[in-house]
Amino acid sequence: MLVEVAGGTDKIGSMTNSPCTTLPRIIDDLAEQGWSVLPQFIPQTLTLQLAKECRDRAKKGALNPAGVGRGNQQQVLEGVRGDHIQWLEPGQSSVTDEFLDRLEALRCELNQSLYLGLEDFEGHFALYPPGSFYKRHVDRFRDDDRRTVTAVLYLNPDWQDEDGGALRLYLDGDKPLDVLPEAGTLVVFMSADLHHEVLLTQRERLSLTGWFRRRSDVLL
Image 1: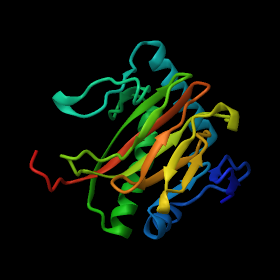
Image 2: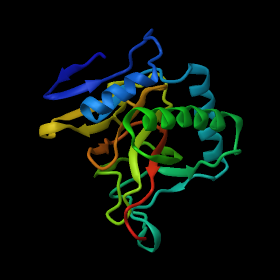
Image 3: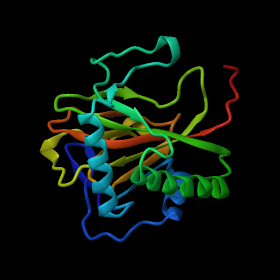
Image 4: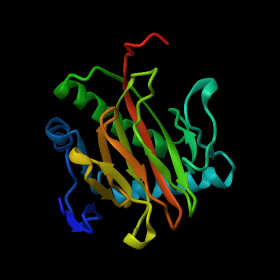
């Protein structure tokens, strides 16, 4: 993994001509450090198809402003997050089904190797317009402990530092690690443990974001 130190913040960018990384790499990373970043997790052709699918849905008005909170407490707060989303369901399209199949294989591997008891995956397309962001947060609700492992796949070819929009992970000691949202890069981390944010983006930023969930220990 190529890591460049810039201004006190580690930065992970795209790595061209890298071999595809296997599922055991994700398992090892999660076990050792609680997060993993893998460039070129899926073929470029599938990445481009998923990006087109996201844009097509946006043009049809299928993506809506994302809310903060859950249930009756959910509200749209553009000062906190500015992405537009649409939830994935099996059977919506062949390309999203292929993506979900790949994550199902990852879910099975996580359960077999780390005994996490993951039961399903929920996820959505996310489109950040230029000028939007998502402030620092964690991915598990206070009253719902089902979200266990976060998985984010980026769909943006030729992303540059000046485009902004990096995913900033706050690691041990609160040292930030910035991950560029380059097409094909998969980021996986433990949902309850890692504070993170999406920095201000200067261009349209696309991703598939979701969570592997286990059975809840909290009475809802």
